Image 1 (cartoon, rainbow, N blue to C red):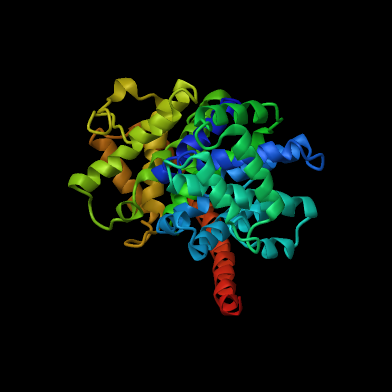
Image 2 (cartoon, rainbow, N blue to C red):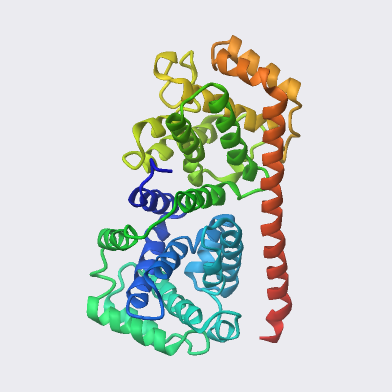
Length: 427
């Protein structure tokens, strides 16, 4: 991950998350920034711990993407909708984030003050959570009332229930509103810059950067059991083919990152289009194709050009019939040809709601037909064919492990929902 700086990683994560719903653009950064202002003044929190909490809060609303219907409920401050996305997001971060110890902050960020106080967390973690609860409510009020001035936000904060929100946290936030004349003087560009300046001093290992990136990619894929497998299999096959094709270490690293990022733009594609059982046409097909352009929009200027080209050229073909640019063989180097083949292998070897996984012989026949028609590289297909059992079994094994992780997250989430439903009448 040396090709990816902390600055660029934060940019990629934020720019991607901002495409979940335009109304929530900047929400995660603003809540993270407000939390940062508080944690910096609290000697109980070290610099490293503060950074890890901020990274976690930047991702605190990824659970919304699991069910976009929750957005309306969230903006209306409906507790059930807020509960669902908070709990799903926390289980996701528990298993896929590099900082799982802070997932409880996400779990409780829409719970009551009483729930936080009775939670199995340290006192300082409870305080961070209570502070974030009130910050989150304040920013969602501003999102729902875009013309609101400081006095209106102060009025909203003063009306927050002491049963649900900690009065000390609310009072501190009201002080910030008065001092900085929030929201009219809260400029997102400044928030982004100050967060970046704070986080860039943190030593983030290559493993942590890879995990943060994988967390971002996985939450897009994990919308359904079927899409959950795609990127994991595609990246694994790309890595194997890169080695078998003799790419040097630096190029293999670029191939891995480009393959990992190749479907970021699918954050804007409705799941019913991604899971469509028939061939897409018309407006739906144009919508599907747009994911490549959006991936480019998110990544351009934030990754090296060779990584960008790998990420956005997996649907181009050697004969110029692909999309979005209709490039031909002259513009498609070996890494681009590898990810194109790996993407097809992944699509064919995955189970979907409307199909079973293709057996190996059929996968190879389809690939050779595409190579013979001039669409994909016959050299890459030949290397795949020569190592077919090893690659195909590795792809299926990667799919099985990803499926197990998906099931584990959903089991815990389902149990959490069940408990919420059972406890609700007594509250």
